[in-house]
Amino acid sequence: MTFLFICYIISSVFYKFYVDINPEIKAMIFNIPVSSNTYAVDMPTECPICKIGIQPNPLCAKIYETENKHITRLGVFLKCPVCHHAYVIEYSRDSERYSNFEIMNYCEPNHFKEKTFDDLPHELSSNFKRIYNQSFEAETQGLYEIAGMGYRKALEFLIKDFLILEYPDDAESIKQMTLSNCISNKINNENIKVVASRCAWIGNDETHYYRKHEELSINDLKEFLNVTLYWISACISTKKALSIEKK
Ligand SMILES: [Zn+2]
Image (cartoon, rainbow, N blue to C red; front, top):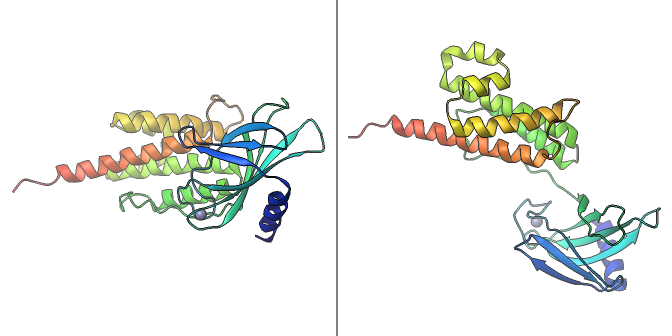
Protein backbone atom coordinates (compact mmCIF):
# COMPACT_ATOMS: atom_id res chain seq x y z
CA MET A 1 0.00 0.00 0.00
CA THR A 2 2.97 2.34 0.64
CA PHE A 3 4.03 1.86 -2.98
CA LEU A 4 0.52 2.77 -4.17
CA PHE A 5 0.48 5.89 -2.05
CA ILE A 6 3.85 7.07 -3.41
CA CYS A 7 2.60 6.43 -6.98
CA TYR A 8 -0.43 8.56 -6.28
CA ILE A 9 1.54 11.47 -4.78
CA ILE A 10 4.05 11.55 -7.66
CA SER A 11 1.40 11.27 -10.35
CA SER A 12 -0.98 13.80 -8.85
CA VAL A 13 1.75 16.41 -8.57
CA PHE A 14 3.12 16.12 -12.09
CA TYR A 15 0.20 14.97 -14.22
CA LYS A 16 -3.21 16.58 -14.16
CA PHE A 17 -5.69 14.66 -16.25
CA TYR A 18 -9.32 14.48 -17.16
CA VAL A 19 -11.35 11.29 -16.88
CA ASP A 20 -14.82 10.54 -18.09
CA ILE A 21 -16.59 7.23 -17.52
CA ASN A 22 -18.84 5.83 -20.20
CA PRO A 23 -20.79 2.99 -18.53
CA GLU A 24 -22.46 1.98 -21.83
CA ILE A 25 -19.18 0.88 -23.40
CA LYS A 26 -17.74 -0.06 -19.98
CA ALA A 27 -14.70 2.08 -20.60
CA MET A 28 -12.85 4.88 -18.92
CA ILE A 29 -11.95 7.73 -21.25
CA PHE A 30 -8.66 9.40 -20.34
CA ASN A 31 -7.68 12.78 -21.65
CA ILE A 32 -4.06 13.23 -20.65
CA PRO A 33 -2.75 16.75 -21.41
CA VAL A 34 0.87 15.66 -21.33
CA SER A 35 0.37 13.82 -24.60
CA SER A 36 -2.71 15.76 -25.82
CA ASN A 37 -4.47 12.51 -26.60
CA THR A 38 -7.62 10.79 -25.39
CA TYR A 39 -7.60 7.11 -24.54
CA ALA A 40 -10.43 4.67 -23.84
CA VAL A 41 -9.47 1.62 -21.79
CA ASP A 42 -11.48 -1.34 -20.47
CA MET A 43 -13.01 -0.55 -17.11
CA PRO A 44 -12.88 -3.24 -14.39
CA THR A 45 -16.42 -4.25 -13.44
CA GLU A 46 -15.51 -5.50 -9.97
CA CYS A 47 -13.04 -4.33 -7.35
CA PRO A 48 -9.95 -6.61 -7.29
CA ILE A 49 -9.79 -6.26 -3.50
CA CYS A 50 -13.37 -6.60 -2.15
CA LYS A 51 -14.75 -8.31 -5.33
CA ILE A 52 -17.90 -6.18 -5.34
CA GLY A 53 -19.16 -4.84 -8.66
CA ILE A 54 -18.25 -1.19 -8.89
CA GLN A 55 -17.70 1.87 -11.03
CA PRO A 56 -14.21 2.78 -9.81
CA ASN A 57 -13.06 6.32 -9.11
CA PRO A 58 -9.96 7.11 -11.21
CA LEU A 59 -7.43 9.14 -9.20
CA CYS A 60 -4.68 9.68 -11.77
CA ALA A 61 -3.03 8.23 -14.85
CA LYS A 62 0.34 8.42 -16.54
CA ILE A 63 1.88 7.28 -19.83
CA TYR A 64 5.48 6.07 -19.65
CA GLU A 65 8.07 4.55 -21.95
CA THR A 66 9.63 1.12 -21.69
CA GLU A 67 13.28 0.33 -22.43
CA ASN A 68 12.20 0.46 -26.09
CA LYS A 69 11.17 4.09 -26.55
CA HIS A 70 8.68 3.20 -29.27
CA ILE A 71 6.66 1.18 -26.79
CA THR A 72 4.67 3.06 -24.15
CA ARG A 73 2.36 1.93 -21.38
CA LEU A 74 -0.48 3.54 -19.45
CA GLY A 75 -0.67 3.25 -15.66
CA VAL A 76 -3.96 4.12 -13.95
CA PHE A 77 -4.49 4.59 -10.23
CA LEU A 78 -8.07 3.88 -9.06
CA LYS A 79 -10.06 3.87 -5.83
CA CYS A 80 -12.92 1.54 -4.95
CA PRO A 81 -16.02 3.43 -3.72
CA VAL A 82 -17.04 0.44 -1.54
CA CYS A 83 -13.92 -0.69 0.37
CA HIS A 84 -12.05 2.59 -0.26
CA HIS A 85 -8.80 0.80 -1.13
CA ALA A 86 -6.72 1.87 -4.11
CA TYR A 87 -5.28 -0.29 -6.86
CA VAL A 88 -3.19 0.08 -10.00
CA ILE A 89 -3.88 -1.14 -13.54
CA GLU A 90 -1.22 -1.14 -16.23
CA TYR A 91 -2.24 -1.19 -19.91
CA SER A 92 -0.14 -1.59 -23.03
CA ARG A 93 -0.74 -1.46 -26.76
CA ASP A 94 0.79 -3.07 -29.79
CA SER A 95 3.64 -1.47 -31.70
CA GLU A 96 1.41 1.25 -33.21
CA ARG A 97 2.54 4.28 -31.25
CA TYR A 98 -0.77 6.16 -31.46
CA SER A 99 -3.19 3.27 -31.11
CA ASN A 100 -5.33 2.78 -28.03
CA PHE A 101 -4.19 0.91 -24.91
CA GLU A 102 -6.13 -2.30 -25.44
CA ILE A 103 -4.15 -4.81 -23.40
CA MET A 104 -4.51 -4.99 -19.60
CA ASN A 105 -1.11 -6.20 -18.33
CA TYR A 106 -2.06 -6.50 -14.68
CA CYS A 107 -4.38 -5.23 -11.98
CA GLU A 108 -2.77 -5.18 -8.52
CA PRO A 109 -3.29 -5.98 -5.73
CA ASN A 110 -5.74 -8.71 -6.71
CA HIS A 111 -7.11 -10.54 -3.68
CA PHE A 112 -8.63 -14.01 -3.96
CA LYS A 113 -12.11 -14.44 -2.52
CA GLU A 114 -13.64 -17.91 -2.64
CA LYS A 115 -16.92 -18.36 -4.52
CA THR A 116 -19.60 -19.91 -2.31
CA PHE A 117 -22.06 -21.13 -5.00
CA ASP A 118 -25.08 -20.40 -2.84
CA ASP A 119 -27.49 -21.39 -5.65
CA LEU A 120 -25.88 -24.80 -6.14
CA PRO A 121 -28.07 -27.61 -4.69
CA HIS A 122 -26.33 -29.08 -1.67
CA GLU A 123 -26.59 -32.59 -3.15
CA LEU A 124 -24.14 -31.58 -5.84
CA SER A 125 -20.43 -31.75 -5.84
CA SER A 126 -18.26 -30.47 -3.06
CA ASN A 127 -15.48 -31.67 -5.41
CA PHE A 128 -16.66 -29.20 -8.05
CA LYS A 129 -16.62 -26.30 -5.57
CA ARG A 130 -13.10 -27.16 -4.39
CA ILE A 131 -11.65 -27.59 -7.91
CA TYR A 132 -13.39 -24.45 -9.21
CA ASN A 133 -12.07 -22.35 -6.33
CA GLN A 134 -8.52 -23.69 -6.68
CA SER A 135 -8.68 -22.78 -10.40
CA PHE A 136 -10.10 -19.37 -9.56
CA GLU A 137 -7.28 -18.76 -7.09
CA ALA A 138 -4.72 -19.72 -9.76
CA GLU A 139 -6.40 -17.33 -12.20
CA THR A 140 -6.36 -14.55 -9.58
CA GLN A 141 -2.61 -15.06 -9.25
CA GLY A 142 -2.20 -14.81 -13.04
CA LEU A 143 -1.54 -18.57 -13.50
CA TYR A 144 -3.88 -18.77 -16.49
CA GLU A 145 -2.46 -21.99 -18.01
CA ILE A 146 -3.14 -23.93 -14.81
CA ALA A 147 -6.47 -22.18 -14.20
CA GLY A 148 -7.79 -23.21 -17.64
CA MET A 149 -6.98 -26.87 -17.01
CA GLY A 150 -8.56 -26.62 -13.56
CA TYR A 151 -11.84 -25.23 -14.92
CA ARG A 152 -11.92 -28.14 -17.42
CA LYS A 153 -11.54 -30.57 -14.50
CA ALA A 154 -14.27 -28.73 -12.53
CA LEU A 155 -16.64 -29.18 -15.49
CA GLU A 156 -15.98 -32.94 -15.57
CA PHE A 157 -16.73 -33.32 -11.84
CA LEU A 158 -19.87 -31.19 -12.17
CA ILE A 159 -21.24 -33.22 -15.10
CA LYS A 160 -20.37 -36.62 -13.61
CA ASP A 161 -21.71 -35.80 -10.13
CA PHE A 162 -24.94 -34.55 -11.74
CA LEU A 163 -25.27 -37.73 -13.80
CA ILE A 164 -24.57 -39.94 -10.77
CA LEU A 165 -27.33 -38.06 -8.94
CA GLU A 166 -29.64 -38.73 -11.90
CA TYR A 167 -28.57 -42.36 -12.48
CA PRO A 168 -27.21 -43.73 -9.17
CA ASP A 169 -27.26 -47.31 -10.46
CA ASP A 170 -24.84 -46.36 -13.28
CA ALA A 171 -22.37 -44.60 -10.98
CA GLU A 172 -19.41 -46.88 -11.68
CA SER A 173 -19.74 -46.72 -15.47
CA ILE A 174 -20.28 -42.93 -15.40
CA LYS A 175 -17.05 -42.48 -13.42
CA GLN A 176 -15.11 -44.28 -16.15
CA MET A 177 -16.73 -42.59 -19.18
CA THR A 178 -15.02 -39.73 -21.01
CA LEU A 179 -16.49 -36.29 -20.43
CA SER A 180 -17.44 -36.01 -24.08
CA ASN A 181 -19.25 -39.36 -23.95
CA CYS A 182 -21.11 -38.30 -20.78
CA ILE A 183 -22.31 -35.07 -22.42
CA SER A 184 -23.27 -36.66 -25.76
CA ASN A 185 -24.91 -39.84 -24.51
CA LYS A 186 -26.10 -39.37 -20.92
CA ILE A 187 -27.25 -35.74 -20.70
CA ASN A 188 -30.88 -35.41 -21.87
CA ASN A 189 -31.41 -31.71 -21.26
CA GLU A 190 -30.55 -29.86 -24.51
CA ASN A 191 -29.55 -26.63 -22.75
CA ILE A 192 -27.01 -28.43 -20.58
CA LYS A 193 -25.78 -30.43 -23.57
CA VAL A 194 -25.11 -27.30 -25.69
CA VAL A 195 -23.26 -25.21 -23.11
CA ALA A 196 -21.39 -28.13 -21.51
CA SER A 197 -20.12 -29.39 -24.87
CA ARG A 198 -18.81 -25.91 -25.85
CA CYS A 199 -17.29 -25.55 -22.41
CA ALA A 200 -15.53 -28.92 -22.87
CA TRP A 201 -14.20 -27.89 -26.31
CA ILE A 202 -12.58 -24.78 -24.88
CA GLY A 203 -11.44 -26.72 -21.81
CA ASN A 204 -9.71 -29.26 -24.02
CA ASP A 205 -7.86 -26.40 -25.74
CA GLU A 206 -6.59 -25.36 -22.30
CA THR A 207 -5.27 -28.89 -21.75
CA HIS A 208 -3.89 -30.03 -25.11
CA TYR A 209 -0.89 -28.94 -27.19
CA TYR A 210 -2.92 -27.96 -30.27
CA ARG A 211 -5.53 -25.22 -29.82
CA LYS A 212 -8.61 -25.68 -32.05
CA HIS A 213 -10.55 -22.55 -31.01
CA GLU A 214 -8.00 -19.76 -30.93
CA GLU A 215 -10.66 -17.04 -30.77
CA LEU A 216 -12.05 -18.36 -27.46
CA SER A 217 -10.44 -17.72 -24.08
CA ILE A 218 -10.57 -18.75 -20.44
CA ASN A 219 -13.30 -16.10 -19.96
CA ASP A 220 -15.52 -17.94 -22.48
CA LEU A 221 -14.76 -21.21 -20.68
CA LYS A 222 -15.86 -19.69 -17.35
CA GLU A 223 -18.97 -18.18 -18.90
CA PHE A 224 -20.12 -21.54 -20.31
CA LEU A 225 -19.18 -23.32 -17.08
CA ASN A 226 -21.36 -20.90 -15.10
CA VAL A 227 -24.25 -21.33 -17.55
CA THR A 228 -23.88 -25.13 -17.31
CA LEU A 229 -24.12 -24.77 -13.56
CA TYR A 230 -27.23 -22.61 -13.95
CA TRP A 231 -29.05 -25.16 -16.15
CA ILE A 232 -28.05 -28.08 -13.89
CA SER A 233 -29.38 -26.22 -10.82
CA ALA A 234 -32.60 -25.43 -12.72
CA CYS A 235 -32.95 -29.07 -13.78
CA ILE A 236 -32.57 -30.35 -10.19
CA SER A 237 -35.05 -27.75 -8.85
CA THR A 238 -37.58 -28.57 -11.59
CA LYS A 239 -37.33 -32.29 -10.82
CA LYS A 240 -37.91 -31.51 -7.14
CA ALA A 241 -41.00 -29.41 -8.03
CA LEU A 242 -42.39 -32.19 -10.23
CA SER A 243 -42.14 -34.65 -7.34
CA ILE A 244 -44.61 -32.59 -5.30
CA GLU A 245 -48.18 -33.90 -5.51
CA LYS A 246 -51.16 -31.53 -5.46
CA LYS A 247 -53.19 -31.84 -2.25
ZN1 LIG B 1 -13.38 -2.67 -3.14
